[in-house]
Length: 165
Image (spheres, rainbow, N blue to C red):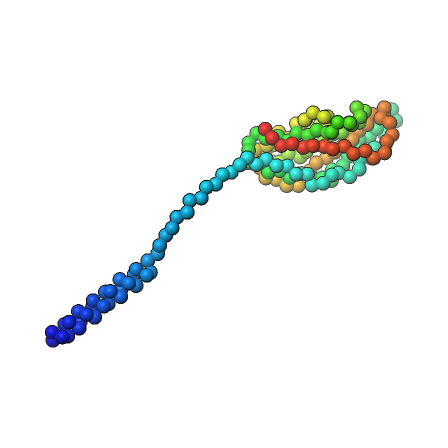
């Protein structure tokens, strides 16, 4: 009986050792990683394409020529800042008797300045832009010469858009 007790104790001891090893093998280990991040100021605007030619071809007798309009282009905007605005200006060299105007449809929550005649100085086009991401917002361009504008062939004008505070 003494041998049987030793055998039983040995079996019990072996069972306990195996159980402890199994629990040790199944226990999980953890490791930590420290990640450093930052979010920078993001305010970007992109124009889909240049508009088609704006050809002034008609006028009502006794009035200035009719405005040629193009509404085929759009813009997209992303900003993680509040209180942003979009301004626009034309490059120097546009004759004083040619008036180039633009209207930008504002993203949600912002305000359009409506039809704005562009000059070589920045003109507010959209104001009150807060954190936003919007695509395919319509742009309308209009060109209207006065009757003193001499006929001329196709001429390029660069419009520069800027987003900022």
